[in-house]
Image (cartoon, rainbow, N blue to C red):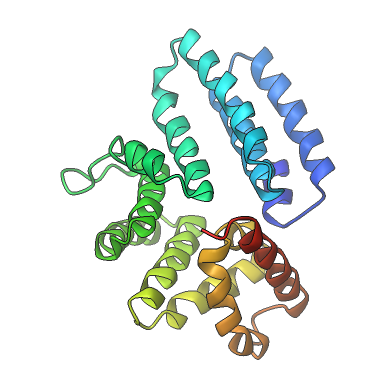
Length: 237
């Protein structure tokens, strides 16, 4: 949990790795693959942040095999969703579409336990230009986040909704600014910067409003803009 918080706030990479490596060992010794997956997932995000897509895959593949060997099949759908997010960074359309077809169908039954896969599916919809389907799913996730007080998911929903509304010429700024204020208050950077090119242009367009907003800390904003611009260069698609 400490490693994840430091990661979200854009903290020292080596301190994050130290905490994640230690937690992974303790999770393995305690035979807790769920906690191991949390640690692996953060290491994947860390490698993607630094532009090393291959390392991200090399970390995730053997863990997937370990999960299969131990018969913990309930973890496989979320592992596949994480592979799908890697494919989104690469712009690997064939893999995105293939993994997208394995996602849960939200129109049949909305299962709150599937929120990670739903949020991955939203990104697949956006990548394929299915903006209205993406927004419809986001509104279900927004309702869940508000009813059960899930501020992180609420911010993620607002961020993705801003991306969609900007592409559809909607009022995206009203979605983005509340996310910026709350993320600034928490010191969270990676929640936003991980969206790379998809959010970078919006941040540039909203720069004046963010700079003049008393609820947005300006040093945080400068760090966010710098890191997001770097992610946009690494992952232009």
